[in-house]
Image 1: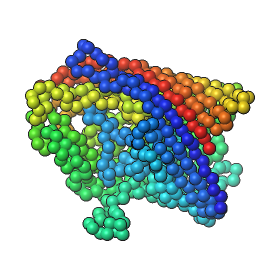
Image 2: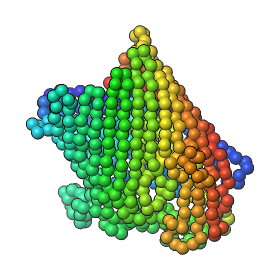
Image 3: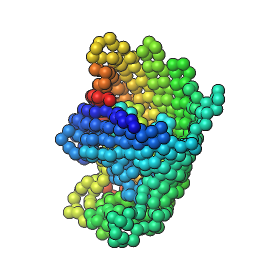
Image 4: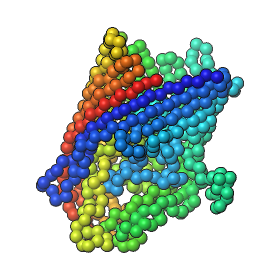
Length: 539
């Protein structure tokens, strides 16, 4: 029996200014600036033990201790779905599990996180992998294990995986695989529950069935990953609790069936010092999110009213793609070109879902699509059940989240690695990266008449842009240096500046036939910056 442990102890300090991209503006009545300078430090000890019992059986695990815990705090959470007016939303269990690529604990990091544990069984007919295991494919825009040195979240699946390989002499290797994932388990163990209540039907589980086919040589790879995710939800049942226009808690959310299918194609080609990679993903089908939102307390709404509930069996139609080209030379020079597209949705609370974005561990810049950025228009007016004066109603939330969505982006980076002869330093690599992006759809385009079930003269908000090229997110410049010190100490000091474009401006047409909200003046977005220091002991 062989035993080994790998991993790292990472400490990271971050200082970031003006993530809301707004400064104080004395020319408007209601200020949009929400945030100033944020400074935090976090740590993570990752342990990856491996037990090899013999040539056929092995067990693997991944533990995160103080998993991205802030100095002086206990835990962190990952944003799930961003909606500019109502803010980030966490999907309910069961119905909402269509959006997840792993168990519900993924991204909700605590002091001790037993993240993954699985077994590999090598047999004459192929390899079986059973347990809670990392999930990664291609560039990582749809399935990303988060195992990069700056990774934070990572996709995990409770999975039964079967793989088989066939070697074609003088040609390459063909790999095929079948997998079964349980994304959500509706039932329970009767030995612990003692059948105090009847367990739901097994059809209430959310399960995924998929297949993998890949051909590869040292220079070339082409592969496909596709399947479907299904759940037979209890039609019409409520899934969560929200507040109505008067602040009363009310059961809401509409459950139903989900039948989601996906296809993910990946290709890689290497030639000398250059490599090229391409990944494209399509998702389709019908999805029930079970999501309901707290009512926006517009004047005229009463008890039990104003709750926004997304309908069951929404149409899913999403396409996203990423391309990378890289050059690494003996001189130490390195360059990386990244481009991609995620189509987004001009009305994210509509019947048609296109807001499925890249996984958050696929990053192109320090700020852009790595942190929540921007400020959506704020709504002020008389509140339902209020005292009669003007009060805050909604809005003032981030425009973009910590994953790539609703964007066409382009990024180019350059670095030079210097080999060092010192006993305490192996190499140092300074470099820079320039990133820009455009919004494919409007970030704010909401007709509340389509969302609020009660009749009324509800407002409409619509951005004053007519084309994607007018919806420019801006340009970001990142500079920094990475180094390997004392054989095992990876260190990186990085800084970035984002000059925002019109896509982050507060600039909307307001149609308010009922005169229930105040006018929304234009407010131009302001610059943001970040500095990040990472020190990781690798072992």
